[in-house]
Image (cartoon, rainbow, N blue to C red; front, side, top):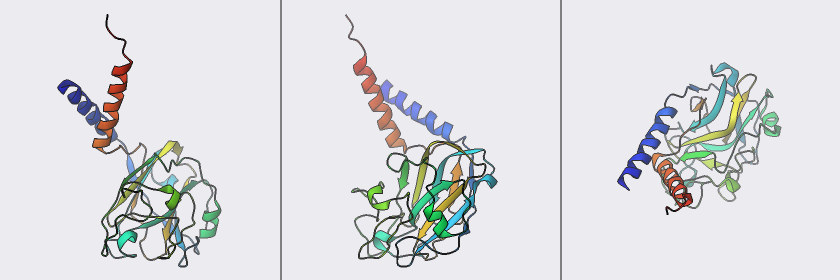
Length: 233
């Protein structure tokens, strides 16, 4: 049993070490004209030309809250409020144009997300808005991160995810996407100053699962393999 645990730990360490060799690049955004979404204050949309990041292709995108507790509301709405994220070859100049894009079908909003929720400002709520029952994952039935459709009213909020102060969300794409002629669009709910600039990183590899999750996955795999082995005579 001890040898098995050491083997699992070593395998997880190798996975994390391999991920460390990946190349990453910060993304520079420009704000598009106008607002979109169902929010009374509107959603501000930012665009980045990924052909300029220096990577031939990308496999993941990470968004980190950098508001330092200053922008937006508190409680369940603390931190950067993400309306949506899209990748497209279309070069939009307005928020309305970006909202109408179908976008590339490379996001898995259910199992392709690695989320580290940030802190809440007072008054603290049981969980951040748009997260699952435990508050540690994303409930995309509420967040709808593939559409610019946020309603940020405190009475009937819907269609976005609050990262919390210092929170980070990473999207592992379903396949590598060439950066040639590729644009990334990010929606900021409420247009309230939580600027996306400087908080986004793209990588040419996937973002690894947390070590504990990786070990659990490897352990389950080992158990299933052991059960499939034929019994010795």
